[in-house]
Image (tube, rainbow, N blue to C red; front, side):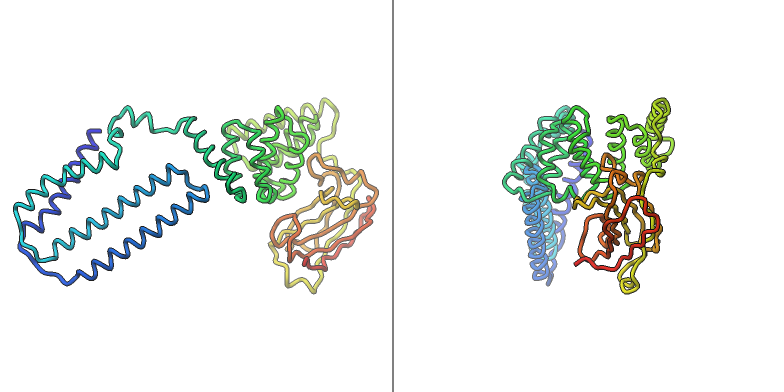
Length: 410
């Protein structure tokens, strides 16, 4: 508090000296009146634009009411300072008689006016160290109030998926998992395209279900890994879901893919290594094979090529997917291989080792449909402009499948 008072006093003295100098020196003339007026109008225009931007952010729920009022006050303060500075500059340049009485009046009025303005617009209680310390952190009640305001705004304007995601994450932090799941449900258009959001949604459902990741949570995890096979949270949850099903070989497979993404030697990496070791021990005791042995299961192999007529439409770094799907029309792949268009022609093998966590296995079918797709958007979902080719009725065990990418997605 003492430091603040000293600094405020020094600034006040500097401001008074700046005001007194034009009154105590000889008058002089200036031709800058019109320039000063233009500058003032420009400042007002900037102020109106910034205020409009704040009002839009507040209306969209990106800025709370309290933050809006604080930002608005700060904007008004800066405008007052700009106007004040310009008026002082004009006072220096306009020919007026120097008056000791005016100087004396300013010397008395400015400190009193500053104190009055601070008492009115400022926060005098903020000079109290105990009060400042008490307000330095936002308490649970304030957080609940902010979340409640966001929820109310989204009820009035529900077509805001980013706002719903923000609300879902806020509810998750507060431990209100049922409400977090409901909020994620409102943001499905955004969540379904984002692997990290899918994984977070799955975790919320697991928390609601006493830690179980079965059912819809597993479907979300599988979808997340379909979009990004290396999504960290999805890999961790997939391993946990497999462990819940006592499929420790799958647990080892998922967590082994996650481990290289962690900082070597970190506490998280050491903990995951220990968990993988334990899962391997359980697998060895039970006699269940580790996931890597699944490559001996029946599968399909072959080669994907790109039609020369479409070669100019593919870039080397475009994402390439090769899927095996059931012929009953379900879109969830039975197995998938991910590569790039630069790897074409590509040799591929689709078997149970390429399956999705907790999904159906390719070995359960006698024949499947094979599809190769160059995804221009980089995602597994079909989008306009994708290059693709497919074969139906491919029998399990086929080893020399030839698949050509020769079509363009409308």
